[in-house]
Length: 480
Image (tube, helix red, strand yellow):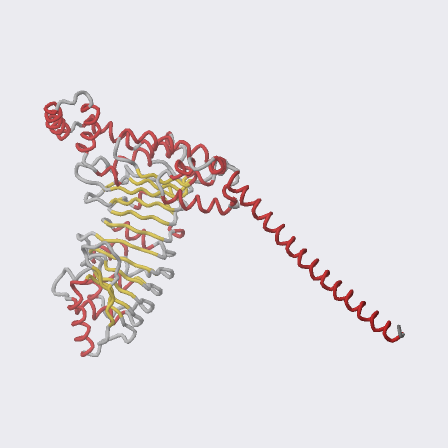
């Protein structure tokens, strides 16, 4: 074979070998990639298998995330820890080792006496298992607003019915028992009431022993004529100092006002309180020792003495203020006691203001409100004094005003009130009112525009129905 032919064959063979080597390298790289993917899949599967099969894994959640989830649940569900306890051993173990979760105490007190013991035991667990951490407490007594006769009737009916299946016996029992329960009996009522307040008593401790750990306290109730819940009875449990309390809310959603006098009052010392809200509850402010400079949010449903207003005016760092003044007050009486015309008062940080009752014109003219953005007339009375003080003050940052109705005192009209608002609030953007007054408001705004009184930034009127417990959802664009 000629040399040239041999050389050609050799070159071809080498090229083939090189091609085969390249294919082998490509196959090796492909297999390595598959092995890498397979190892990752196997590791992930092992983690999933471990999370699903191991009872102490908590489904793979890191402890901080699990804490956040549990805290949100416990804060919004009555005695929520009891439910979380039953999910798995992992959750139970996590809860037992987390003192922080036990500091969030939220209880909806049931209306049945036999369910109170569980609430008491839960409160005991919270106090004991939270160590020495501060407590955030919310107790809702709304369910116990039932008439005492109804509570007593429901409590006694079932065990007495079990004595016999006879229909006539049950009819007679129902008639007799209902009549007896309606007649009441102070000894029964007092005993029941003390029993229903056991959760509060447990959280407070003997002579207020645990109240030095309270950080926030909210109690919600509905005081009615015959209801089991009477807020006045709380005094015996809450009359001790609570030095760490930063937030206190006592919310009475019933028709009957709770009144405490200065010698029979709750929380006598609140040195750290920043948020105090009393809804349909009258507590003399001079009976509570607190630092006015720390107060940031203050809500008082009714001021019935000048000292209370004077105390409010000293809370210069407020960001939210809501109050209503008694109708028997006169401007002369306020001038004499508080001397608004001699002392200059200012709320440099107050953003939202809600006022009701007989607020005197001198309040608007002599109290500086430089950064208030939201003003609510919570009833029909303060708009009259706002109108009378018109021209003596301005609210330069105010953007929204809420009316609940027309002025209650003649001769002030809706048009007068709107005139005062437009003159005092150059940055006004929105009005809020009940829907039934919308036509009167729009008509008054048009008439004021014809008189040359308007605010160019005012663009919307938001409305709601008094009968519906919803926010101001309906909006009308004001193109006047």
